[in-house]
Image 1 (cartoon, one colour):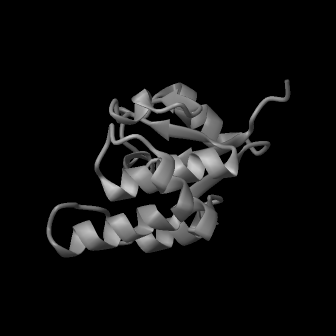
Image 2 (tube, rainbow, N blue to C red; image 1 turned 45 degrees about the horizontal axis):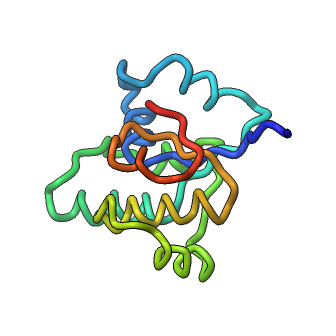
Length: 129
C-alpha cells in the first residue's frame, strides 16, 4: 500500500503554525517541512479565520495573509463533490467548517491533521495533533 503524502490542515493547526506555537508537535512540524508531502489548507479554513476574526472570536497575527501567501501550503478549493459529501457524514460534529474539512479529507484522499477529538470519531485518516 502506498504511503499517503497528502495532508489537510485543520484551521487551528494552521494558526499554531503561524504563531509558532510550542504545542505543535515535532512530528507535525516534520510532516509540514517534508518537501515530499503535499500540505493543503482549505478555503473553508480561510473563511473560518476571516469570519471569526471579524466577529472577535479569533485572534490571528496581523500579517496572517502574508504568512499564508508565503507558505508552501496548497490552497484547496471547495468543490461540488466536497459539498455533496457533507450529506453522508454522521453528526458527531456540528461545526460547519470542521465538517467541510472532514468531507474534503474523504473526497481528496488526504490525512487530516487535527487536535479536535470530535473529528477523531470520523472514519478518515487522521494525524493527531
